[in-house]
Image (cartoon, rainbow, N blue to C red; front, side, top):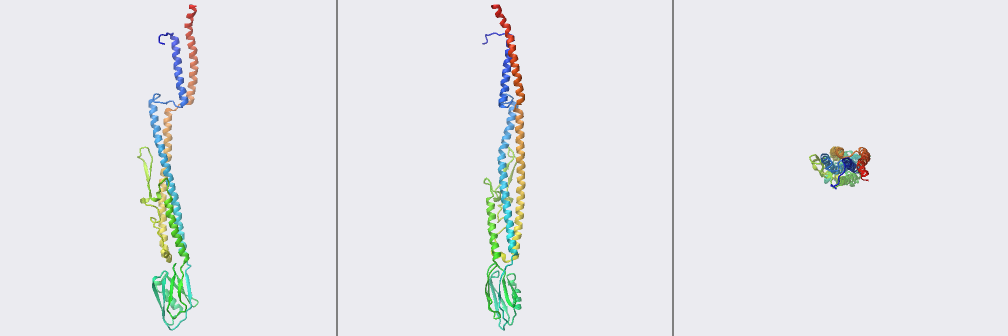
Amino acid sequence: MSDITISRGVRSNLLALQNIAAGRETIQSRLASGKKVNSALDNPTNFFTASSLNSRGNDLGALLDSMSNGIKTLEAADNGLKSITKTVESLQSTIRQARQDKSWQGESYAFTATSGTGDIVFTGGAVGTTAVTVAVSANASVDDVVASINGNSSLTSKVRASNDNGKLRIENLSTSDLTVTDTAVATTGTGGTIGGNTVRADLIEQFNDLRQQLDRTSEDASFNGINLLRGDALAITFNETGSSSITIQSKDAEAINATNLGIDTQATSVADSDADLDAVLTDLSTALGSLRSQSSAFGSNLSVVQNRQDFTKSMINTLRGGADNLTLADQNEEGANLLALNTRAQLATSALSFASQGDQQVLQFLR
């Protein structure tokens, strides 16, 4: 169409209409997409800067999933520690009950002083398999025999004797059966078996059952395949370059279980001695201290991860906001621009009509 000649006025108005149409197309694209920079052709600097900001925001967003899983792993470990702590406290309560119980079994035997001599032999119970013999002298009274039994160092805290209204009473200070053999002619009916303290024995059995539950709780405190109470390591990355991270693990990478806490399985015989029970209570107190220390460490780690999670969310919002500032269109402004262009298009069309009237006047002469 280059061979068609139009007047200068018409050409000027036509160019204005073309520019207005191009402007309207650009504004309509911005209104439709919501962006003023849709490609590098629109604004190379803003486009590539926004792309870089969005890419970093996306990288940080991918790390949020790892942080969320890390928080849940720490929460699972904390739940396990709380349960284990309660179990240890129950263990303490069980041992204290055993420590306070004094329901020792005993038997009272008739006693008649004679001129003969003999022995009273003790085996079993806390005495053990090695027999302890107490000699009974001629014409000994019940009080004399009581003093001999209680004064025997091999029977201290194992057997206790007393005068029961003229009878010789023997108590078994143990959780297992005590056998008493009487060869002393000074006593009548002495001998047989004295049962052990079943209350203390049952409490020790409860203690061992609770100890097993402690280990089972520790094994079950895992999340997504990671169990901090088993000594697993939890690694969490905080930035897109990997230069900021944290590795969370139990102290010395040891599993938190009964063995490592120093809580041993107890034989029933431990209840025979108050001193032995006190030693178990000391071990349990130490275990509680270790649990509380580990719980505090995990709590601090949890705070760090939660703080970084909040920081990362804020950082992502900042990055994406910065990218939006470079690329997003102001809908109100673009709408006003489109309205102005439509008005200008109408004016340009009218102007084009006026400019073409000059050419139309030539037709009047040709008629």
